[in-house]
Length: 174
Image 1 (cartoon, rainbow, N blue to C red):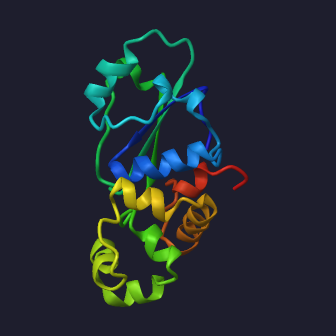
Image 2: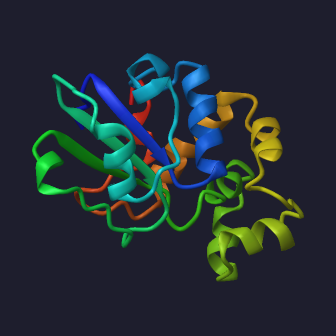
């Protein structure tokens, strides 16, 4: 995966944003806040709004848009004016970001047998509620070594399709 000098990192939800923030703050990613448009993580999910808010500025170099999301179907169609200047890379966290908690707890096999959604499994089997809240994630993954281990394990056990990327692809030394 080749990243441009300028990166727009668009996070689908709070959980994804907090995880990226933890990784950025601990210098675990292939890029830093200095590379990010406006120096921050973004939450703009519609291509039209993104163009209007961020691309109408005069960039002399290309931009990489990293979309951190759990859906493979969500479209992000840029207009023809920008398509050659922007490289869109989807970082897929399917089925849901809660899978990182399940992996950290060492309960992946039990989760697969349960046939539950990750959020349901976290609540009922792990007795962990609000796993997508900022407070929970910051506390639970305050040791980013544990977060990185869960991300690497996710890559190992998940079905990352050819041409897709996962959070592990953004990690330094990975």
